[in-house]
Length: 168
Image (cartoon, rainbow, N blue to C red; front, top):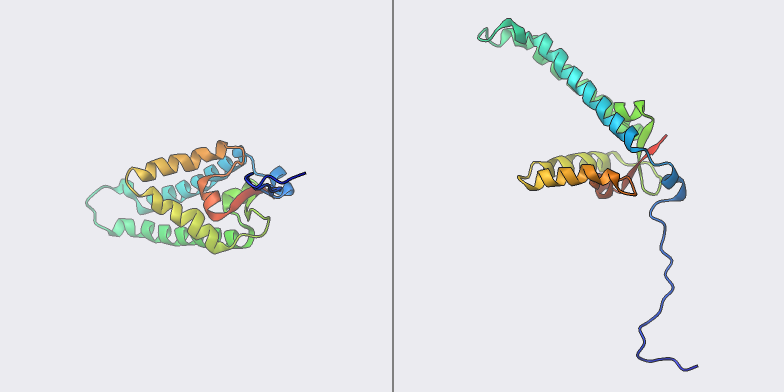
């Protein structure tokens, strides 16, 4: 058999699976991810509501800063506690309070533990920064959210940080 000198080169390609088999079957459901976001949002809303009540916003306008000072202090202390608590949970378990309640966690696509910088910078800060860009931010936020309905069940921020959310 003679070889055709002008034929395109042939190669056997074996493509790796997108995710390890155990992660593909253990991906968090859309409902679990939505539930985690809702729980985190309710916690944040409760924090704002409690501090607004502590500030005594119903006491009337024009009474100066003094009536609002307890609310500002409560907000700062509670907000700092919530932030530190979520950072500790993210660094140790890849979870926020909402994710912990829904038994889901953030891991790398190879199944390894996700570094805190990857979660904070690539999944949170960069996404929030892009969201503030006029016109582009709205479109990006919409696409980021709607990507959850894809086959992989990963949002744009998951692809940016090379992460996946799985059941624990």
